[in-house]
Length: 150
Image (cartoon, rainbow, N blue to C red):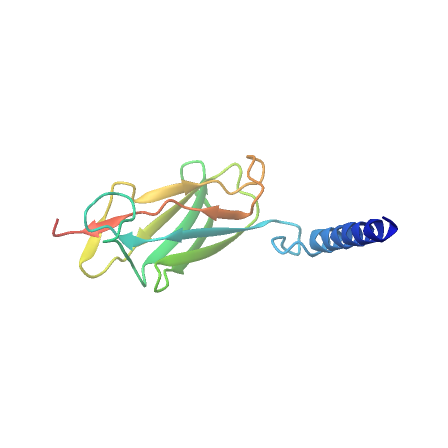
């Protein structure tokens, strides 16, 4: 009985120690205390126009993606670009809290057979911790692209 108590006490101590270390490291905090959000998305060709991925969907490589935050109608507060990889995935780091702003991700420069961006040409994303989402990683609904021949 005493041996099992010692093992449990050791495990609890290790857990508490690792939790303290994890809290001190804070990998998504910038040096000035601002949060660093990671905006993640995927762009793919939707040849059937389903507006969701299917067996026929193909990821699009080399598509330019822009994250733009604005306050009011014309006051641009943040802009950052990225490019999709061979899996159609992009990652954009965004420093700071943008609670009072409208942030949108937009895809551009689609080349090849799949050239028509669907109706949702851009997608809004919430970049603040004050909205109930604890994670600093934000996933964006993809701006689907379909074959212009269809």
